[in-house]
Every structure is written in structure tokens, then in C-alpha cells.
Length: 362
Ligand code: ADP
Image (cartoon, rainbow, N blue to C red):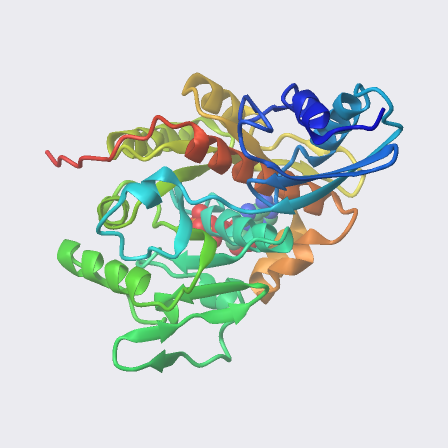
């Protein structure tokens, strides 16, 4: 008796996407079932190329399809198609309709590694195959010209009001640091900050993007409010170092996003610990502090990044891709953070409980 597609699909209905909590058939992730004698090839379309559960899903698909009588071999092919967030789809006045997800990266205080995380998140997502833009929304202290090695590049424009983003390290990026003189202090009053950020976000020719990562200024000022009013955000990542004072500030940042009705995708613990030349791990700031805070605030924990000299050196040299050296601990930690964030984006955008934000300022 020959194997039928219906039999295979019946078994695939038992395979759950562990993050999304539904089966692959219901989620419309099965794109192909090819039966050749006793071999079945299943094409699975993931919701992000940075899916951390590929191996688990492949194993579960193989196990399930092998339950169909007569099947001896099962192969699984993965493709990925990032699905636009419901926020994106629901918004009628969205100035960036070709961007599927806008993700803000914020922090309670400066110097905790917010820009470092934003940059590595963007470059890391692009390394996994996503189309990514990165906006330096830190209009008070733009650090991208250095951290992305943009110093020798000239800004180009198309027409009078469109800025062409820089195409570097596999991503498109833009920063106010390339549009103003960087050694002059950037003093913006509220409305000016609003206008500068708005122009930077909407007049850059991003094109089609799976993810636009926005590095916010530290704290709870004007820019997050402008951003939440301007663009449909899928969510925000909060960066925090482990010590108590940093946690307190991060809590305020989390509450700010909640007040703006921006879902918190999770917390990254930066400068989590330090590995000395002796190979020993030193918990300088109290490793686990930000993770514990995330759990208390019911926010997902996206992973920890140790204090690492190469990371600092690559930031100073403007070479973020070097952080992802194959087999390095740093590369592994960063990739985990990238994949966990991508998974939270998928969970958030497929949870179906989106409410259009209403902003009230008091
Ligand atoms: P923020 O955006 O929060 O102000 P940055 O990302 O600009 O912070 O980081 C501040 C400085 O700390 C930069 O020089 C950066 O290279 C360095 N840095 C950030 N995270 C780490 C880390 N995990 N290990 C080593 N240096 C780091």
C-alpha cells in the first residue's frame, strides 16, 4: 500500500512548534510533502531564519512521519518567511509598511551596552539570513559611526528628502552621527528630538526589511514616546547589567514600555561575568541579577553576554561581524541572544492578542 499525503499530514498535526504552542499544520508551516517510495521529504517554513528550535522540529517531524506505515526515511528541508506583525498589518498610518517588525532596544541607564546589543542583534539576525535595518535612535549620543566603522563613508541622498542607508556588515543602517558634526554636543528640545528622530526613521530608504532594530537613547525620555506613536512596534528588548542599581533602572524602562503598550520581548544581561586569563569565571557585577529581575517582572530572559575584550575591541574598530567567530564562546552567546529574540518576536506576533496602543501622556 502506498503512502499518502493525507497520512503524512495527519501525523504532522501532532508536531508542535514548542515556542508558538500550536501544531505545524495549523500554523501553515508545512509547505511541501514529497513522497518517493518509502522516503518522505517534508518542507517546513519557519517564521524566522534565526529559529533556535530547528533541530528539535526536524527530529519531531521525522519521528512523527515515521509512524506512517511503510515510511522508512524522512528528510526535512527548512525555509523561512518572516511574517509581518499584527501591529504592522493593523496600522493604517504606518510610515514604514515594508518593514515587517520594528524592535526597540532600550536600557534604563547609559553605558550598559545597549548599542552593543542592538548592533549585534542586527548583525546576528542578518547572519542567519534575515533582511535587517538598524537605526541609531540615540540622537543625543550616537555611537554608530565608530561602532559600525562608518567614519570614512559619505551620506548619500535620493532627491531632497530621502537618505540612503549605509550597506555594511550585511545590514542597512543609519545614524544621526553622520548627519551632524559629532564633536558638537547634540542638544535637542522635546519637539526637536521628536522631529529629528521622526525624519531619521521615516526618511531613510529602508526598502523591504524583516526586522528594523532601533537603538533608543538610555532612560525614559522623548524618543521612546515618539517611536511608540510613530511606528507599530513588535516589541522592545531591555539591556541591563547584573548589579542592583542597573536593575532598578531597567525596571523603570520595562514599566515605560508597558505604559506605552509596547510588549517587552525580553531582557539581555550584559557584562554578565568575566573570564580571566586563568580560565576562571568572575562574577564582577553579580551574575544572574538581570536574569532574576526579568523573571520578577515576568519578562522573558534572552541570554547573557560576558565582559569580553574582543567585543569591546571589535566595537571600537567598527567590525561587529568579528564577534561571531565560529566556535567562539562570544559568538555562541551572541547567537543564542539573537535566536531567543527572534523567537520572542515570532511568539509576540503570532499570539493574536494584539491591542492597538493608545498613548495617553500625563
Ligand atoms: P550604551 O549604548 O548602553 O551606552 P555601549 O553599547 O555604547 O553602551 O557600550 C559602552 C562601552 O562598553 C563600549 O565601549 C562597548 O564596547 C563596551 N561594552 C559593552 N558591552 C561589553 C561587554 N560585554 N564586554 C566588553 N565591553 C563591552
